[in-house]
Image 1 (cartoon, rainbow, N blue to C red):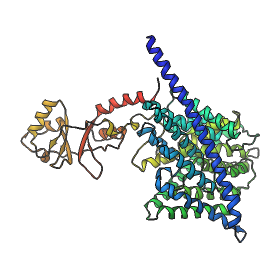
Image 2 (spheres, rainbow, N blue to C red; image 1 turned 45 degrees about the vertical axis):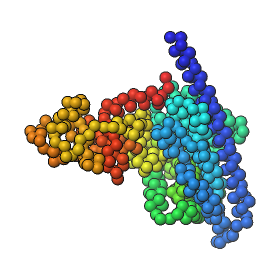
Image 3 (cartoon, rainbow, N blue to C red; image 1 turned 120 degrees about the vertical axis):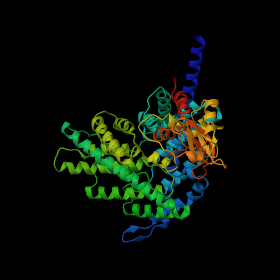
Image 4 (cartoon, rainbow, N blue to C red; image 1 turned 90 degrees about the horizontal axis):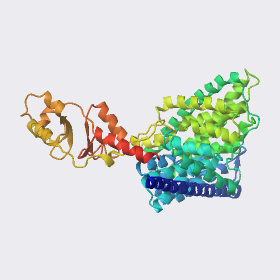
Length: 569
């Protein structure tokens, strides 16, 4: 018993030391990233802009050129490493699920460069998702260098993501919960301990170097009355609907870009031009870049309602075309911007009927509700409100708004989020809101690679013989080129009086197959839907050649192994 205690203590010592290291490198990565964004923003808007400024009708057309130049500069990097496009969180999810948390070291460096140039040149993007990706990448490098067990590798990837988010917002609790909600899909366990350590460490590093790091200014005089709570819930519902429409628009435009024959550089030029035009109209209100200045103005009630509505429209357009055209950057800050302005609009309209209403309170709750809908991460936003405001006054309305935004968007997005939809387009189907076990296991990892099969030309007598010899109750049926044409088993033979018939002539019922890149969850759903005990595994949708089989027993066994690899004990 004593050696078990020592072994357990040693394991946790390793976990805690490496979670601290993950927080340290995540914080350092966040600092480097912030400084590079500031450098490129100064270069583009203070050094370069005065030399390319020319005015027509009072508008400085030089603003249009800035994001275009940024797009041209990052195009070679994105062509070299396409995975650095976008916010990076889907890539962390994919690495966490399918590669034991392994992220190639080059991606962290390229992500820092590409995203800092993109945001610095004015693309309407956030730094939060990329910061989390950078933290996860650097933590993954550490776990690979020390050749840590795969369950600790995955955990450190989550720690790095949490450290990056925490450092960005000065919100360690929100950073930790973001990692849990996005990677573990809301599962709470002992994994929370090292993730919190990494999150606190990452936040401490950025605070030590940069001071106050969130960039979001919150009014001191926020409050509400009990009678307003239903209105906060109603605003959350509308925010969730708007969030779902925003996500659908984002992927609609993304699909249009990707289905076109335009080369990447031309896509970036188109996206940069649209961003430049949108930002040129209101260059001081946060359309360019992260947008915290526009959030501050809306939060403090310094913008009229008609301007708020126009800015929401322009920020949506700028963000959608920044991401869809291929810029590297996040969705986090633009979502907070849109939600803040929408909440301020809702509060101003409500104040026409209830004069005591404070629109700033609705702006804060709207920020939480909109992102809860976009990312399907309500707990993260509730805690972030508490950490940003430094008190718990606004927690009840923030909870109502966030939950309402989460649920209404969930209905319209059918359980997906802005992060998982990107993976779904790659054939990786993941639904938010439930712990990931079978989704983290691929069919290729657990299938039987030398299966027993029958040819379609074989007689049913041979099937009976195989059943008695192997104890199996079902077999894949293949043609002479090993292409799957059906399945046959005990159930089928019971209904057939003539065992001299060939298998190919006998099999009629519909059947499903699996692919090695699918998850065990997808395989289980197929087994249940088609009432099969076995799934033939074929090479791909275009190549129907048999390479293995997977059974319910394989999946159940993998489930319990997955539990051991996912959660600490």
